[in-house]
Length: 284
Image (tube, rainbow, N blue to C red; front, side, top):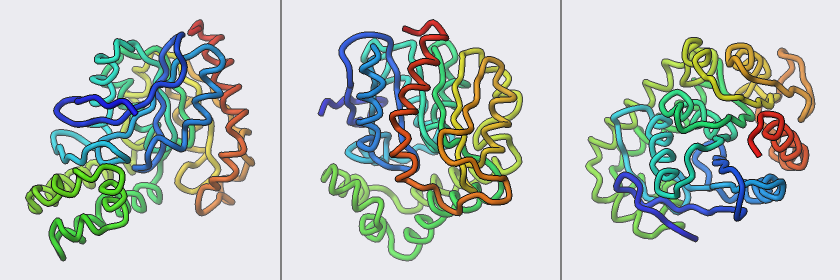
């Protein structure tokens, strides 16, 4: 796969489609972009080019720990720089869960480079913030304190990063554990501060400032609540919400974990909704 050096970091990426407007899609958590290939092919077949990439600390890209902003702010700036290198700006930016957070931060930080937003499984609420802050940051702070960077290398996530890009082992071992803990602590604090916000990472004013058209598809679990999607759609001025792509569930009867098969089975509909939305928005 192609690779680029973006802000000093090796980024693994792939472009699906050979012509048409550019769309960048990003998966949730710190997973590799591979899970979005089939969805991207379906969207590209409607006349688009889809840019997929492994964010720093994900998949086959470099591990690197920049505490100058939240993790999602760093990711958003990386995508903007990658888009510049590929002459792909302005972009439609979209994603699921953590990928949706990246997209929202891209919209806030780089509005001139944005054509539209495609968001699904948006994240918000106290339970989501508490659980995810521990999963993304808290556990690695504990691991580094107990066993240093060797233990971080052996953790489930970072061992996968090493498997995908062997150079990451040396990069991790050369990282000062106190600096690693400091960055993870900063990222964790920024994440925890989002508990009272409409969605993780963005205030009401941030969302109201987004001028680009946005398409939101609601989740149905306690991390990606339909209430969060409704809040976001109510604040982003030029937005539309679809709340029936996966099984509709009452706010007091949500799934404890998202159903990956349910979302996988819904990909054909996702592609149809997003493609139709983009054409209505004049992005074609």
